[in-house]
Length: 147
Image (cartoon, rainbow, N blue to C red; front, side, top):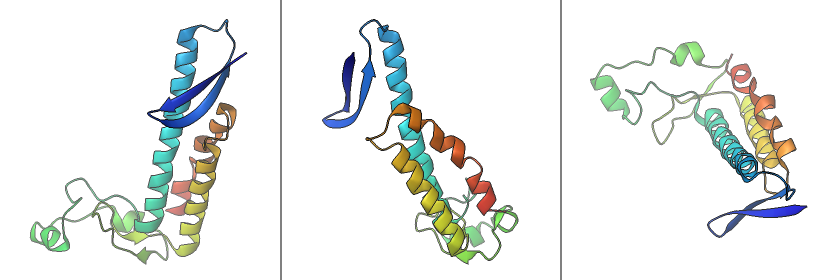
């Protein structure tokens, strides 16, 4: 039995347990899948938190523009009203990437809690078997809160 200590720079990422007889290609692909899966879950958790705070994305041509620029260019978000959750809260995105129609506070709590649970599942103290689950369990969460 061999335990590999996987690092990125000087920062410890995780330990990987394998046997000496396992092919190097298999070990490398397993380690890459674990590392990339953790990064993917972290990105999705960040986006879930932002979705809860500021609502859905604006169309690409409207992202980063000020309110004055949007009215001057006569741009409209065709999906803002269609995708706005019931009882939405208006919370402007400081980066200008999202529409500002956030879900109500109880739905924000659901999104934040789900992101926290998924982050905990891929934290450095868990193994790959546990890490496979967070994405599968969270797939239906965003559509549920934005209906």
